[in-house]
Image (cartoon, rainbow, N blue to C red):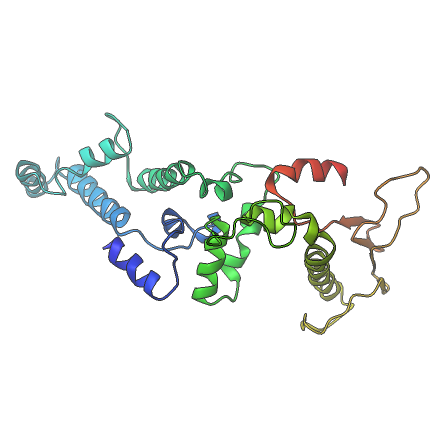
Length: 285
């Protein structure tokens, strides 16, 4: 059944053939696609039914007889406990439905981590510097078409192969990979990366201005960032040096929010960087 469902998704370009199929069955809050796995659902249903019959077998002869007959015939219901224990390596340990759901998610993550390309995205699940919930906001609340969502997931899975062209079109010295095109190409630094950075700053600036009552517009396409916006409550500066008593090398934060009521100053830095450089970039800033 899962194969049939995935075939339909591929035919409608919601899922790409080389993409991470285990990711389809993770929740959208964990960078997944939020689909239900038929195998996992059947395991949960049979486990719950088996637990219900087993817990009531001591007071109901009918439930005890049904469970004994299922075990004697070797049906799916009668052998579900052994199947789950063997599949997830539990040994003699018995699990309930909630524990089974947790084991199913862990098994999906383990399968993903066995793949060279697919594990790159999910290696950040245990990283304290990465906000998984914030990173998956576009999956939970984004207004994306199914085809666009499938394409974005395809790129996040690092399944981008540009045919016979192996070198980057911009620097012509490195291999054309997703990571290289996203953050590592020096020839794209002063054009594509700068434009992307400015677009992120523009989005954050509009969000902050709406939050503090400086703007009432939600049209990002026509919005222009001002170097300083101020009212009686807050002052927001963009790309403005901060006066300090000592010399500071990195002294032009992207956005500075000065709350005049509480006296709190918030510095917002926008960077689109590779996962391996997260800690270093945070230390520098």
